[in-house]
Image (cartoon, rainbow over all chains, first blue to last red; front, top):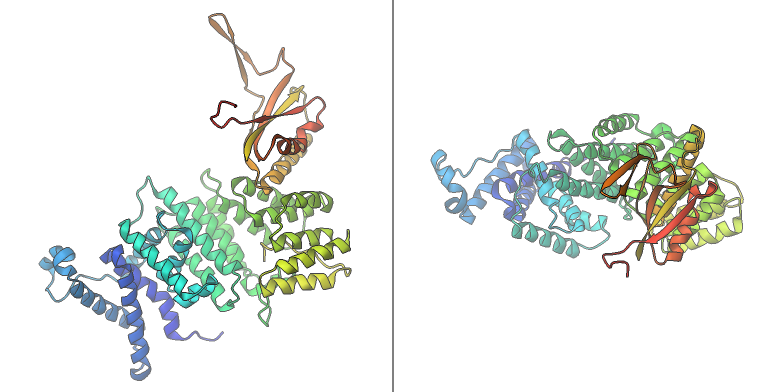
Length: 421
Length: 120
């Protein structure tokens, strides 16, 4: 493995840490300033390190610079006389500014509290994901724009409005109260789920971006697990789901970067350590009596870590999808449920059910129909695949469908509707 | 979009069934409900177990409590599902797939749920 360049690597990990600590110290209305201070710190590193050499302890260097910049900011803002000074005059000289605590514990606490602030109910879902990417994961505006298939201006506007909202609502950087925590935690988990899915299923083709996105979602989910108050069963269930999916990262890409579908993957490349971790988290998630959609999705993903096709596997997956759809409908769950139905109850019944779904704008709907008709009526299978090809949005999907058309009449193995990859 | 309740009416509910029959019936029911949910038309539902059921009747000033919905009535309600449907006919199409219909004499009653409009 090639060593990642030091500065971009540090940026991704340290940007969000510096931002979280400063925002917690200054208040949410200074979120953008905190981000600016973190950015300027890295800019200075970028300007000086190549000439003066990388410091012995790069992180300590960054923290020192960030602290100095933050103190300058306090002075400029005259926060000193208005807000913080009252408590600080006593203990510190006027020029020192407030204590900026960049200890491991304070960083972790700050990031966790920022996570709840970013996922505040007053902020639209899409903006929450964007803001989490920027503030908590240290993604650049360019990268976020790529992930959302949009441009920098749109993302900047979205983030600006989200920060304004945080300011208007005077969202406190703190863990929600006992009474609120379940509901607020639901919103946080939704955002982390979307963050992970953005990386895992993203239509954007930037492979370089996809895995870091997923890993960041996992890191934040892990933060929730590490805190006593937020270590709830749905958190562990979501973390288990992410582990099972992430275990297939090495198998999902061929050597020339193409997406390899689940059934064609070399399972010896699946990361067994992550699968075992996922199993452990899923077990812990089964404490308590609440069954979240993450429990069901994690169980489905668990069954997909067993490659051998047995009647038990597909019957269990079918029943899990039956329950998942009762909790929360989604087109992809409906399609995958129908695929499981074909495997458990046979194609004839699945075709009857598939035709009721009428997801006529969805390329995966026609891919599924094509799969179901394969070998029963290859003419119909071809028509459905061709319709899927017309509707497909990404190059990877088009390639997959073209391959299916080419393979018609040659038998070949059925492939799921798209969820498990 | 209206909501309709599909009410499962069982004849001879006290008939014994084997665990295998019970399991097969459970799977059919879950697959049926999953099929409705896959069309985004499922709103809710519950099974109503026969055991430990009571019937309360008024006789003058007193109420008489008897065990179970059985006894002098043969037919009883075993559960319900609430579906979203554009018309009663669409709701009837869902009801036709209900696995309890396999049992002789069983029926599914389809009733629109009043939306605070007193059934008008």
